[in-house]
Length: 565
Image (cartoon, rainbow, N blue to C red; front, side):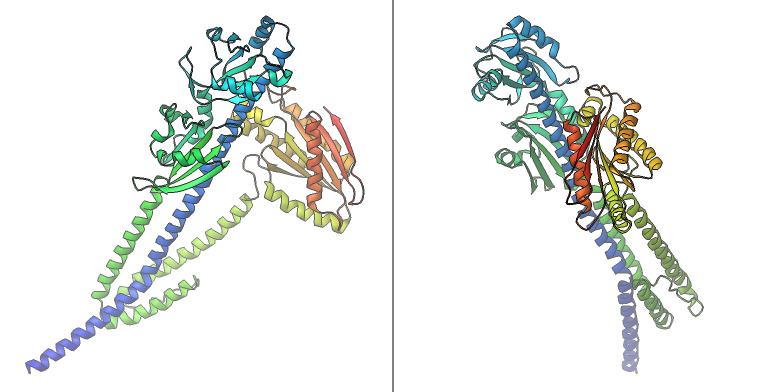
């Protein structure tokens, strides 16, 4: 009898454990994939975030490198101008007077202009502290004399002012062909650091501008203490100092694991015509810190949910659990197939399962709603992808879609199609003078003006890229398109936006006009290239000009008309 009783108890125990095992397995099948999918999606988002962050910061780095190059080019232009003055002036005194009068107030990064005689002594300067000093042994002075070309120095500490600077030199011999004076300029490194302000204040980002010897020339305002230090002494950059200095590539990216275990990506970009390089370092760990926390929480939540479900399975009874769970599993499977209209019928379920069934139904409703929201969000993103947010006009993608449609329509109707390419004159100088926010405001005003003209002329306006806009007008010929181009040019002039570095003292535009009657021998690219060519001609003819380029058919020669403002 005791043996029989023991066997019966063991059978009951095995049966109970079997049910619990099946329930536990089913619970894991239902819950774990959802939680693990969430964790996997977060991992994917993390990888995407790193890639996007790297691309964003490296694009900013390239823009900063271009701006540094523009500063250097402006210094070179000033030195060449003063060299021409010296070459044409009679006497040192007159050259000095003209030098002091030629220091541009719009280029605050030029600290001092100087004229050094053939012997290297400073004959005159916009800062009298330099007059009489001997520069004959300076490498940049001798380099300019030997190469008869523009030379940009490495990091220096000005002896008269004890300020960190770099020097630029240009010999008059490059103009006259005979040994003569050398024009010198000291460049304010504070301004070169200000150009890098958009790379500062960002967690996990380190950016510096170094010279050919690896000395830091400039850094964002929050890291100015690095200026003057060698690169191999800068934390987190010392590991790539040798690689950055030895690379002869215009731009390169290196990924490595730092001594502290953090993953880093380093991008270094050479400043053209100099030995300088802009280096940007991204700490992937700090950039993705927030999403890493979400991933850890997702795994923790997955563990907690699985534990709760397993505990619930251990206390369930076979008759009250197996059948309801099978029903729930079947419904969950339909959910997995995307059948969000599926619902668990609560009528035949035990009361203990009714809340769970309602939760499944609520989850299905929320997932269905989320799917509809995603579809709506995708529709909005599709529209946004064709709109330039700054000007409010269509972007290049939207313009290309529209010109394809209008071209196909014109092929069917035999109508003409005209395209105007509009470019803001000297816009880089405008940004340098007034700053990026004012540049954006200027583009926004131009976008409003073009939108008004487009509405009045049944045209399609877009921002083609940067400071270049376009206007597509169906059903008009080249002469009418040219008149609209003049209307645009005058409308921009009437905005009277100040532009101190422009010959017109205000913002102006150049307009290229092209018209064509679409046929099988032409393509939309022909019309765009013709308008671009006309725009280039307008720029070449002095800007603030409208030039038309005829594209009647593929067999006829192009003709042009121009009108200067």
